[in-house]
Amino acid sequence: DVKVTQSSRYLVKRTGEKVFLECVQDMDHENMFWYRQDPGLGLRLIYFSYDVKMKEKGDIPEGYSVSREKKERFSLILESASTNQTSMYLCASSLRGVSTDTQYFGPGTRLTVL
Amino acid sequence: KQEVTQIPAALSVPEGENLVLNCSFTDSAIYNLQWFRQDPGKGLTSLLLIQSSQREQTSGRLNASLDKSSGRSTLYIAASQPGDSATYLCAIMNYGGATNKLIFGTGTLLAVQP
Figure: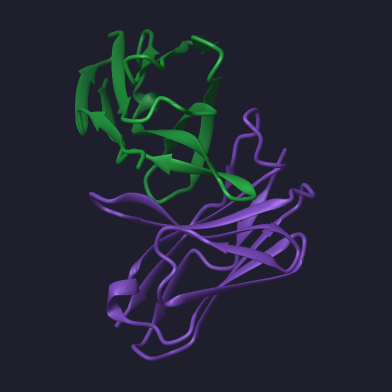
């Protein structure tokens, strides 16, 4: 079974702090994704990566950056956390991204910024 | 720009009923459509994936159909059980850059009453 793990289930940070969210997958997937999920807005793609050290902006990249130094690990960084970044963050991975590939999701990190 | 809509936003049914969840999309040029399940406070689990050349997929009590020409998909759940209670999300795979991205609907919250 594919396993996608996220470093924290719940996280509380203060405005202006630098925040790291870690995601690890154990199935040698090439693609990894970071989404945020908000009531009424659904899941929105922040960044994705299709290879080590490669990254592409999603639909809402402002205020975020990412790092993929190793194939199995994809980190989301909030350089200076703000209250409007309070949300559920979901990481996902997929093998290649072709039409037959599904995405496998981690359990999510609920981030609260005070 | 692809838009994905799910109606109704919430649905409550008694145990044993057959039910249909709806998903509509605006751009028929898709690679696939997927249905996911999300339990409260958790990540997403893939239920069914329909490629653009297919019309339906079945898994146990679940059947998903795809009509690209009308921009619609349905998820049919037979003989519903309380354990089916969750949020159901549909997602379209659109081509985007070096990898394919998913565009999600906002989901249908299903409650099956015992």
